[in-house]
Image (cartoon, rainbow, N blue to C red; front, side, top):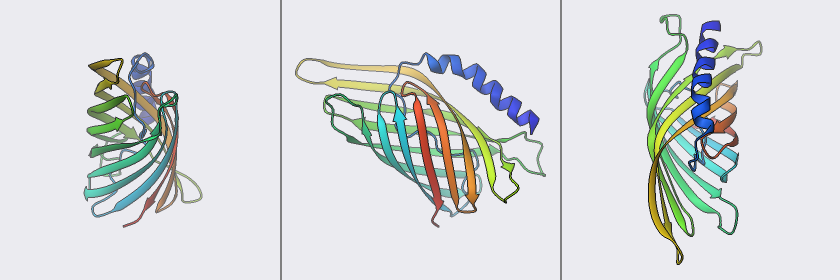
Length: 215
């Protein structure tokens, strides 16, 4: 356990300076997931609330396990960038492959997964397209009441393309951005998980969520 926590802290310390200086738009969905795949044939529905420096959001996610160590998610949300811009729909998706599995049969220090990510939002005068990849690590800690606490961290590298289109200004720009999320998941029951996290990726803020196994 100590080794896993040291590794997670080291990743956060190395990644945080770059993430704090990121000036991108950032994610409206956050992470709200731990590294392990949900399990083959398992369906999971989640709802999330994001209070960010760039946008506030309310989101829904459906995640499905395609194998023991991989799953994908489809995301839909409402995001509000503030100002005079109305709340609009945001869509996203990711694919997660768990290549480290913590267990008695392995020597891996924690659960670790990798995968691609995608987000798109179109507002009144501009649109934002993001795509890239992430590394996600977590470590489960068994509690005395048969629940589990899992601290987790995600580091992502992505390309953000912003298109401005109004009567005064038209422009397109694409930048490489970095992001970091650190949080904790509480597995209350075998099918219900509460999550809370801090995000540093341009849309810095607090994200809260709950995931339910529905299949």
